[in-house]
Every structure is written in structure tokens, then in C-alpha cells.
Amino acid sequence: MSDMFGNLAFLSCVFNKPKVALYSHQRWRGLLNKAAPALQADLIMMNTNETSILSGDNDEFEQSNRLPITALLALALAGFVTILTEALPAGLLPQIGEGLGVSQSLAGQLVTVYAIGSLVAAIPLMAITQGVRRRPLLLVAIVGFAIANTVTTFSTNYILTIVVRFLAGVSAGLLWALLAGYAARMVPEHLKGRAIAIAMVGTPLALSLGVPAGTFIGTLVGWRACFGIMSVLALILIVWVRVNVPDFPGQAVGKRFSLKQVFILPGIRSVLFVVLTFVLAHNILYTYIAPFLRNANMSERTDFALLVFGVTAMFGIWIIGMLVDRHLRALTLGSTVLFGAAALVLGIASDMPLAIYGAISAWGLSFGGAATLFQTALAKAAGGAADVAQSMLVTAWNLAIAGGGIVGGILLDSIGPGAFSPALLMLLIAALLAIWSARRYGFPAL
Image (cartoon, rainbow, N blue to C red):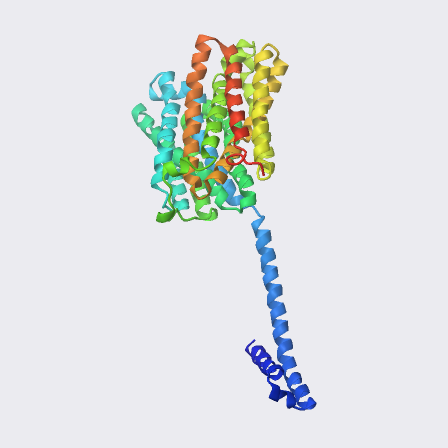
């Protein structure tokens, strides 16, 4: 290339200096003939480099459109372990109560303290650990599950079991705050929603398949074996994450966000409000689905109704995962309207089994991808503060779970299952209005 510039400089002098113009025609030809090979060689090199660069850009473009499936499935398994660790005791209360020498109601507090751990830990832990690298933090959360489930497997002391269940809940709060932001950081902007959908697929799988399977295994070989299996899964997951999941830095000191800064970002409060109302409506119905079905003379079909819900929820998360990056707003509006239609049918056709199954199918379809929709919306609104924002979502979600139990219980005792439908419709209308008004931030029209 230096020869090229030298020749060009010489030719420039030839063209611009009057005295040089007196050279003979033969001298001009000689100079040009000498310059030509060097120019040709340099042009060939430039063309080769350009082709190489373009080829590299093409490879980079192809790479940017690939999803890191192995890493995302590791996150999905982490979600599966988290949900199964939380919900498994609910199906094994008689066996756990007998094994620990307590009543079933006290055994049920294993679920309660887990939820409390998640509720109180998510925001403080994420605020404190903003500067910590992400993979070691994720591994700490998974190790927490391995320890808690191992201790639960062998513990015969109720207080000790309660303590480690609280610690498992703390691990869950940390993991849920990490999960969506972690998945989003693995991919370019146009694939974030799909990546979050894959990372979240463990949740409906755990609810629709894991909990029934765990209950069956616990009934067959004992509840301790179930928690032992969960410990083994956590150990496998530790290796998987260490080998296949990329690491990311935490936030630099100058780029960290306070809770107040994140909370007042445009769109954050709208998304959190929708999470609270939508998930509260879901949990009122999900927590008290058995008495609702009993009121409809379908109490013996509760297991089948939950299976229908779980299967349609799987379809829901698949549909959302395919379309969320292009149609976030439309899908969120559609899911809320579909859930509202299901609540309406449950209210006006509560004595018609076929209509109830149809409504449960619509409910499952609308709820299956809800977590992906909300986490994608929050990640887009929060930008670099996604992890802190996700910790707020975890808190809002757990508040809605607790609120569903409280509000649903009050409605059931004071009015009866017939009050569920109007309550759900009021909450979902509020959610729909919030989504509609968040057209610019939160749930923007693309």
C-alpha cells in the first residue's frame, strides 16, 4: 500500500507541476507503466480485504440472528427448579406433615415462608449486587436451591425446614430478578422477547407437568425423594450454567441506578400496575379453583381442569414467544381481553361444564405468555436498569400471589365463588386501561 501511495504522490506531482509537463510522451508512458503493477496489486489487496470484511459482516449478521438455545435452556431449567421448589409441598402436605410431626396447616407454611423470602429479598438483593458479575450471582442462587432442598430432604426438624425454605425463597427472589435480564443480554434487541420466552418456558412446564409428576413420585416413594431429585437437578444446573451460560459484568459504579431512578423511568409504573392487577386476577381464580368448580358440581374434575389450563398455557407461551418481539402491545391487549372474556363466561355459564372448560382453556392461553410479555415490556422500558426493574416485577408478582389468596378468601367467605367473575373483570378492565394508555412507554405501538 505504501508503494501505491508513493506512486500516486509521484503522479500527482507529474500532473500538477508545470515543469514536469515538458517531459516527453515516452517518459510519461514509462512512469505510468511502472506505476500500474503497484496500483493493480494494491487494488487487488483492497478488493480482497473488502470481500473479507463483507464476509465477516455477513457472518456477524447471521450470528446476531441465532438464539443461544443451550444457554437459554439452562435458564429455563433454573426457572423450572425455582417453581417446582416453591409449589411441590402443596401437593404433598399430608406426607410432609406426618414426616415432620406437624399438622397439614403448619406444613402448608413451607409454601408461605418461601413466598415471603422471595418478596422481601428481590429488591434489596438486586440493589446491593448491581456491580457483581451476573454468572457468579446466578450460581449463588442455584447453590442456594441445592443446599435448601438437600437439607429439606434429610431434615426431621420443622423449624430447621422452615428456615431453609425461607432461604430457598431468598434464592428464588434473586434468580427471578436475574432471569429475564440475563436472557435479554444474550441476544440483540430484535430477539430479546423470544429469548425471554425460552428462558421462561420452565415456569408453565413446572406448573403443568412438574408439580403433578412430583406429587405422584412423592406419593409413590415418599416426599423426601422429591426434594432429593430437586437437589440433583440443581447440581446438574450448576455445571450447565458454568459451562454454557456466558458471563456479563455488573453495572459500573457511575452507571448504577437507585430504586427511585428506576421506578420513575417512563413506562415502568404502567407495567408494574398491569402485573399487579393481571396476576392478582389470575391468583384469585387459580388459588380457589377447587371451590369454584365444586360450586359448579365439577369438584371431581379439578385435576383435569388444571391439566387443561396447563396445556393451553404451554400453547400460550409458544405463541407469545414467536410474536412478542414484533407485536408486544397487541399481544398484551389481546391476552387481557381474552382473560376478561374467560372471566365473563365463568360468571354467566357457571353451571355449564363445556363452557367452563372452554373458559379455562382461554384463561390458560392468555396467562401462559403473560410473564414473557410483562418481562419483555419491563426490560425494554428499563434499558440498562433491567435487573433492578425485574426485581420490582418479582415483588409485584409475589404481592399479587399473596393478594390473590387474601382477596379470594374474603370473597369466598363473604359472598361465594359467584363473586370471582365480577372481581376478575374489574381488575382486568383496570389492566386493559393501563395498557391502552401506555402507548408511548411501557407497551408502545411499534
